[in-house]
Structures are given as C-alpha cells and as structure tokens.
Image (cartoon, rainbow, N blue to C red; front, side):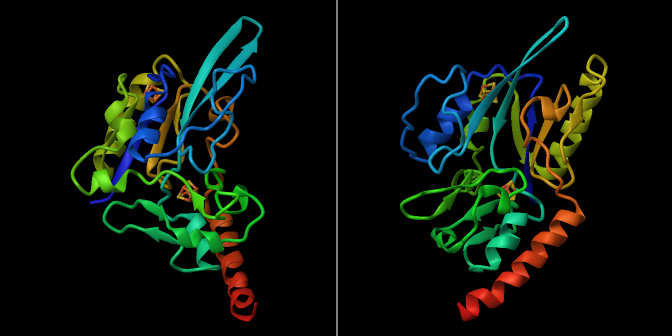
Length: 238
Ligand code: SF4
Ligand code: SF4
C-alpha cells in the first residue's frame, strides 16, 4: 500500500527538529551559513540539505503573520522529474512501487538541465557542483521499509508531520481541513491528488513561499513528457 505524509502547517512552530533529524539520519554534512537577516538557515535547499524550514513574515494594515514551511520533495504520484530524467538515463530516478517514494541515484549525474525548475515544478532537487549528482529527500525509504517512520516525522514534537498509508493520510488531511476551515476559511490542502506530501495551509499557499504549490496538472506533465521524448535522440546520437 503506497504511503503519504500529512504536514499540518497550522501546528508548525519552526523548531526545525525535522531539519536536524533529516541531516542526522542521512549522515549529511553541515552547511556553513551566515546571518542574512532571517531565522531561515540555511538560506536555501542544497545537495546536502534535503529539508528546510522556510520562514516568511507577512505584514499589512493590522496584520503580522509568521508563516513556517518545512519544505521537502513531494514524492509526486506521477513525478515530472522522472519523466525528464528518463530522457537522459532511465536508471537515474527510481519510482518505488510499494511506497511511491521517488528515489534519486548516482546516475542523476547524467541529467543535464540548467536549473532545478526544469526538473521539478516544486523547485526541490539540488545538484552537487563537483559530482554533478542531484539529490533530495529519500522518504527515509530505508526506515520505511523496516516499519519505521521517516526521521522528520518521528522527531516532530507538535504533530505537524504525520506519515502512513495513503488512504488513511488523505482521510486525516480532509478531516483536519474541515476543523481548520472553521477559523481559517481560506485553508487548503495543496495538490493532494498529485503529491505524497500533503500540506495543509492555513492561509493562501503563495504567502508561505512561491513553490508551495505547482501546476502539476496535465498541461505541465504533457510538456515534461514531450521534453523527455525530445531528449532521447540527443542522448543516442550525442
Ligand atoms: S517534488 Fe520534484 S523532485 Fe520530488 S518527486 Fe515531485 S518532481 Fe520529483
Ligand atoms: S519538527 Fe515539526 S514543528 Fe518542528 S519545524 Fe519540523 S514540522 Fe515544524
């Protein structure tokens, strides 16, 4: 039975336990950072930072909101990144049938795109400038295959992050949305049908970060498929 996450942003306190747990379990090196005027640290995802809690301050007449967005790969149901990657090397990105996890291998070094956005509508993967290998969240597949929760979910102290069988998670997300909507009428579940990391936003998604949502509908997928096909002859004859 495939898996999914539910991330209830109405509960997140930006403690960053999930970000640290991800580093620790995946044995990822620290990223050297400097003060750039925000608690968000590091400033962006990178090839050794798979999870980043983004901070956004929203102000207006009588309004002051601090919004937190623990960002990671969404493990898309039909992953556009795999469609693009297959055009370069069909073994580069693996879609695990049992869980739905989208897994990047060392063969992603063959993916020749100019920016993460050409690979992913959520702007998630990052490339190691030395090895050229692309990386991102693994769903902690090694833990999940052994009956454990992903490290970020295991660590979250507020109940923001949940993980389990997809149907149960979808039911949980819909039930929670109904509760949150009573006080936050604009609350929404983001792209719930097309991703396995389902965010509940209390406020309009774009207020949190520009890539919270994505046009992962048929038009984008159609372009990705076309792009992947176009790339195949280039690889054969290149
Ligand atoms: S969020 Fe991006 S990197 Fe993750 S599966 Fe979807 S397209 Fe691929
Ligand atoms: S561990 Fe939970 S509460 Fe803390 S930043 Fe991550 S999602 Fe938010």
